[in-house]
Length: 226
Image 1 (cartoon, rainbow, N blue to C red):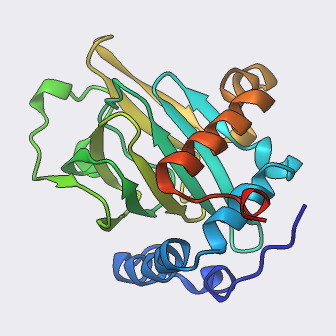
Image 2 (image 1 turned 180 degrees about the vertical axis):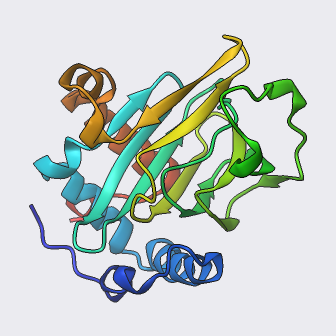
């Protein structure tokens, strides 16, 4: 495991995760470094090839791969990279943590429905009206408080960076229109081994996704450049 050091990573503990302005500024610092420092993103991807603790945090879903590039345990902050596959459309949900996001490539339709104080298990998904809707494309970024309810509809091979803060609650709610109901999702500490295993990426999937991301973004690894 390489020791990845960078001023942008060292400053993660200074972000106030209840203040979206602070999250925007902190995210801008991190995203600027990841985009403009030619060594940082390739270095983090290279490190993920060998860092067992980070590989164990990577997850695969039906239309989405989540790579964990950096885990600051002291600050309880992670940097993730999301690779969306064809057909991705998530359901209205809030989050356990506040976050900032940056679009590296591709684009997605982003709809925000408001605050989760008006959002519960009995909420009819068809009753939700977006108060903000826009196309997020390459170079776009935003911060979202954990109480916000939103959805994302992504094009295939869209890649985003996500800077997530400490958990503010134990669970978050997803409204499932297709199933006609809702369900709660809990953090890893409250999941069973079977639940964790069901979404943990296999060794080959992690390496495959790293390679795919490097190809799409042009973030050739240090190994390939040497």
